[in-house]
Image 1: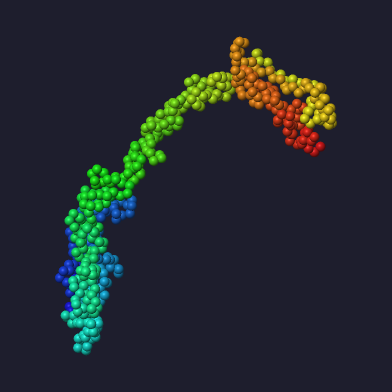
Image 2: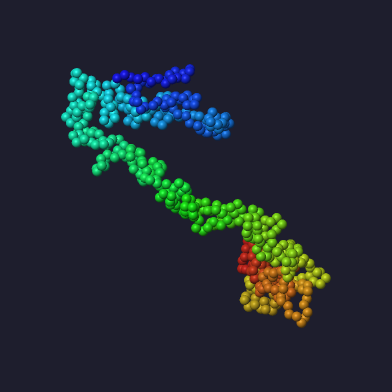
Length: 502
């Protein structure tokens, strides 16, 4: 056997590439060495790619050397070739059976070593004198086969015998045992048939992984599929020119586009996905609906269109157009409008019939408040102790003093109330009205407060009633009717406040 040395023509200044192979089959074509002026090493192909993809992000991209300034020509291994692991600038062919005892000279083409031959399984096996598979070698270099085997026509190796034959697309791989060729599978009725992975679908597998489609179907993704020449967006072609939509989509009138479904509709927006709305400009999605937005705000109002605010009844839009403010028909002089027709007066003013008026004390018509006094010692009937001598009193004694001697002092301080500013005529009935609320009391006339039982009008006021303790609260203060709270440092003993260390 003569070894053929194939030399690729080198570029000037470079060394030639050599590798030893057996005789090349006539149908093997070596890869081109040149393509439009570009030198191509064996097994390498060129490809145009965007020049920007060859540089880091943000790097200045120079003009490319491709068909235009934005493209560059790059080398890559051709189909059926791989990078040589010892020097990655070279591409070498790939053989699926690893080419044991031979050279892989082209994709899936193996040339056997000297004294080796290709058997029926397309493997390189030894011949005499090295060895004789399924037989033994003689000194003269001939081979004698084991029982069930016979020499091949070239008398180089022993092959199994199948007396009935194996038919098409099969080999005898053991005595009286047939096996389908690679890429074929056994059909018990018809024998070995070609295998296509994936299945051809609407077509016929005529060779290993080669489909012939039925009429009206096209080969797509290695299988024969229905043909929808107008397309089938968001769906799949189930029959010729017939689409079936994916879940959440429905077919439009033209029968080629499946549009998304929004069951609640998509007012002021577009249905861009199943149950998903994309709102128009000036609208935003709220509770599944596209509602208008007012960029400046619309407090106390309703945004009916983008940046169009309509106020509720009793409100009007302020000058900046940012919120709706309440309207008071009176204008709220000396106060501010907090709700429709409701004013809050400024400090020093009181609301009189919805109008804020300044409160003034008329010293000429309103006498100063008068508090009654009594020179006699004050007695607290609750504790039954004389306030001066601090001696306990019997019940009968205390009751006698309470009902006779000290009776006048139980009257609370008297306060003269200011007269009404606008007195009504005598023949007209009036509804009690007080410009201030009566604390611990109730209004009985025009700016006249009456205190609740156990309370007396505070000195200097006409509207504030405070708790009343008839006997006073020495070393304490009256916090509830007839109840004293001692000052700091004093404790209550026998009902009176005394110094706690006494």
